[in-house]
Image 1 (cartoon, rainbow, N blue to C red):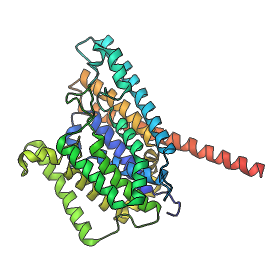
Image 2: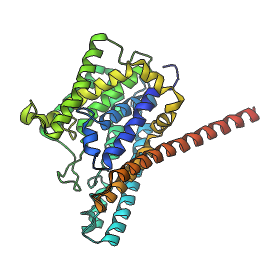
Image 3: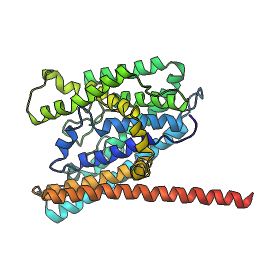
Image 4: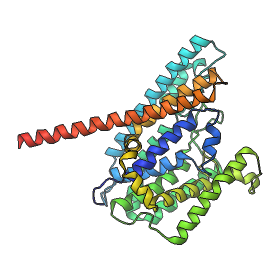
Length: 367
């Protein structure tokens, strides 16, 4: 890799963050909008790109087992997760006090029945309401990443084969971590399943870092990916709206399971990434100043994502308090939430640029 930043990753990640916010906010149109992108959604794309970014940031060829940097990042994500939990608990308490026990903020209803015990469960990542098991999934993946790098240097086939085997066994056997806050009593994003998407991204990221071709263009593969991605949109939407029954019958749920990273979801996200990576217009758009705000949001993904989680939680609370909220007001909340996330990304980028310029100026003056 020549050291030039790959803006396509930032662009796709920034778009994914905004789409995740829309899906989490639970507007009246959120679910249908989320189902209108095929069998997968922005979550798969974000995890795939996270694997690529992880490799670009932490992988060192033939460097052995290096734990410090990815594990330090995992600790930071864990602490951010706890902060988000505390903020959501406080908001939930304020809603309960203001509107009574009949109106409880989203997915926090059980917490106040035994806050001390469930607070301890939250520390151990076994009590995570709502969308709060996303960052913990990344914590697990980052703890695993150094071992994935080590196995990659020994045998790329072994890494992908073992990862696929774990994904298959976990999905088939519904092997998951406990989460007392959700109805299913398990993590909504099973790390044992989602690690396969992350590892695929890691493999691609290592290739990029080594200067090797990433998703090289092949006419037949591109055509197949385009047909699959295009056909998945109306087909999945028709299934969601009940217009037709799945041709896979009872197997359909397993094929599109979000918890277990169903195979149709993985094929779909890989098809979308392959198409995006091989369309020159996407590369041009990623480098265009008009889309810089979205790219910047993708660069500062942790803060922007955390902001999106809190904003979507606030939107869910508002929708709970006013189920008949006018669509115009919902669209204003959507635009305001997306705008705020982009603005936060821009502020962080300006601070980063100013800091880099100050350091550069200091080096010049001391030289």
